[in-house]
Length: 458
Image (cartoon, rainbow, N blue to C red):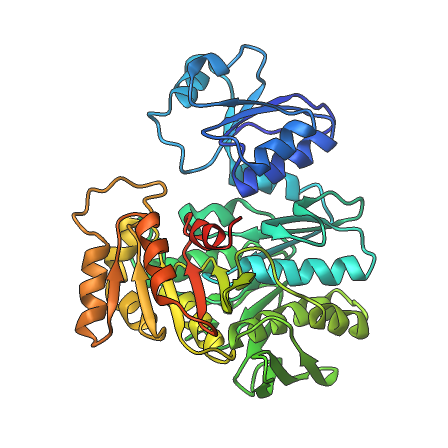
């Protein structure tokens, strides 16, 4: 595999530079003196920001974008062999690497690399950790899978040894990393277009845990079934968090304010801690426990940690309050897995509201087919359910399923469910049926957020 020499910056070309992670890596290399260029299908706020920094971006897919002066190309695992730019890279014998390999090489340049993994909660927990490190004046470098308002984006370039990144298991990307501290938030069935089953996923997380050095530390959710299979005989220190009283960081009590926010106590090696969050849901309590445990391992002052967590207001597309119109509260959330949907809707139920509406956009055909029954059950936690077409993302519709299949599963559970093939139809239906004091959540990893923004006139 090609190795980038950070002491001798060169010309790096990113295929798909507008992606949240790719854009952050491009920005980081730019600050290190590399010449950066790339391509994407469409202009976006992310690509505009990169262009404002001086990065040259081509739009569309064309072999002509691949010049002879490119020293290395970077691409994601979603780029297919049929991509004409990738074909041109290979035809010109230009070295190339996957995004995960580049991220792994970057991690080697930091003394305190931190990787945050799990089926759910990576972006929120990475953001919590980021806020703690920023408040503690550690001057970290941050690579976040979402927009954190504090830093005005998804990437922050620091000058210390601290490097924090999300670690995604899809296509085993995180096995290319070199962390010293790792978090495993949860392990569930997902990405079944790549993994065979849950056992295959657990095996991947075990390999991820084995990447840690003897002087490193793994912080893992002790509620994961048989988590010891992941931690057994690791050379590093292992810390657990969760509901079980045997966990190193154990949740002892939990209640909710009238506004739906959690207040809780946790038993830690340093004593009982009391926290009150400004993000909803028990899942965020678990995310906070993981961040708290990591902060203690890093010897961050406890008062700073607690203050940072209590002042944390979330990231974009994670139960994000978009606005209110006609007395209707509009929330947007990235949830695209049954567990995420259930936890988000359970959190929403604790908010004051009349009727809870959920507009759900299924994400990928393989995930929808594999977890159909679980999706249906989770969505019934909403009072009224509206489905859009499946967002294909990296896939083609070759499985013969549609949102109508999910609609039938929901109806078979005795819940009324509506399906519309266009966003215009969804918006018109909501305008006719939502009333004052209702809560509307647009949900999914695609572009369903546009529905709420249109309703708000944005």
